[in-house]
Picture 1 (cartoon, rainbow, N blue to C red):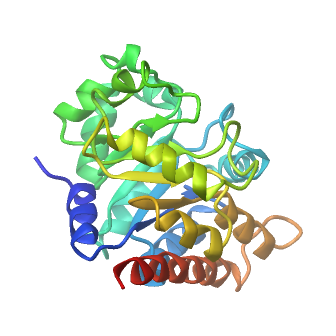
Picture 2: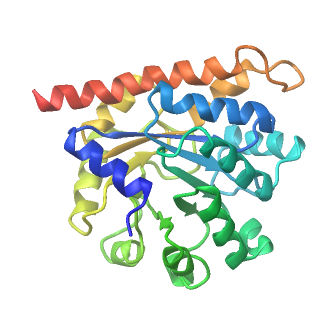
Length: 279
């Protein structure tokens, strides 16, 4: 069974181009604006969209994404409403891959079987659950795969060759390589080290490798796109959204364009890298 994620990466491979994967918190700063921003992403150049599931204890996230989650929760966002967001997006876009990213607790409370059924019917293509290790695959990973959803695992600079096979065993869709050690948005990745890491991962899997954490500009995205199958941008987009809000953290007329313009700029960097590589 192929998913939208599988098809998108396959199509981009034929174009000899890396994917631009964008992350935003679902419901930030409010559900309506969040939907408007998400709808603008594919037009701006996003190839895959990750939607954060707001959670009160996001241990892998830096201050920007933590704050985004709190804004979404304050606006009344729930896991049910995240799925509603996906359904609303799918009314106008049935091709862009959508990945839900977050933590296991809200899914556990929702109920795994019910969540997977609802996610699939809403139009979700994959999951990134950062606090479920391979040893817990029976909890969610294996049921998700059985339901036809990709389960995308994170590999890090500390994932050595002994650990990597376990990490990759039930991974599908793509591998998300975390280019720095630490929380989201904490530093800028070193493209030369990224290339070595991606090559090492590819010796263990045929899956595409997307690189994220710390990508903030078109120049960094271009450098990484020369080394990887995808570039993930999250904190920079969340920061752009935050800067567009008023003093009460409410959306303004500039909120959608603030995010879309940055995505378009970074998308230009990703595409430039592949044009250079193809020459």
